[in-house]
Image (cartoon, rainbow, N blue to C red):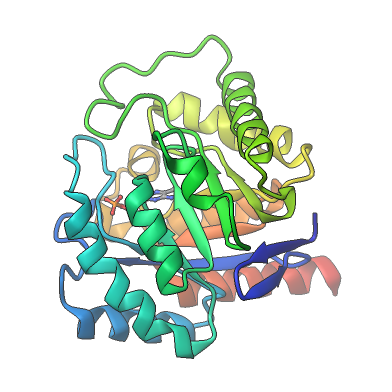
Length: 275
Ligand SMILES: Nc1nc2ncc(COP(=O)(O)OP(=O)(O)O)nc2c(=O)[nH]1
């Protein structure tokens, strides 16, 4: 699949795309959240677009390990004004939520992609997204953010994640969703130890073999801290390296905090690969 139906857009995935993280949270793991500050959110989004972001991922609830859920009305109040303010920019807008009511509100506001770390498993999620053209990012998570890192265990992490995502794709297609709208994501750090994350990294090809595009979210994550010993605010090099390697393993979208550096690295990769 070399194009993704993404709401108002058809995203050409013959080259890797950069999804910029715009967190409307006070407590995101990387400390980059802008909370309820609409102006700060738009400033963050504008900088990301100027730096070359292909999509914007708007999130209003932290899903870091140990985080508690945010009431859906709070998520909606944070997200909808930002989506509406971004519509004129003509940049695909993704909304990162696992709540069906927030999905509906985001789609009604004009969002082009729904990014669900819970793989559209919440009751009502399939119904919330089956109509329309918005892209749907289906991510694997074992457990829930509050407890997922307590003791994740797999017999075959790549096989189990691949099987989970295949089952979610089947459920979405059975609900009437066109495969051309779907993106797969192994969910790095979502109920995985470092070793499981590294196995999934090497196993990205199992997901790309489905023919569906794969999104990789590695930016600043604790797995990179475990490898480098760097604190969360010193993981730029590791994050850019991880994005490059994910693309070389077949990922077509990388979800990042540091847009300009990632865009530059992908330009170097493209130049070397294509001469
Ligand atoms: N599809 C997808 N969505 C995601 N959403 C949030 C985070 C966690 O990162 P971040 O949003 O920076 O932190 P927080 O959830 O604490 O706001 N990671 C992913 C990911 O890997 N894939």
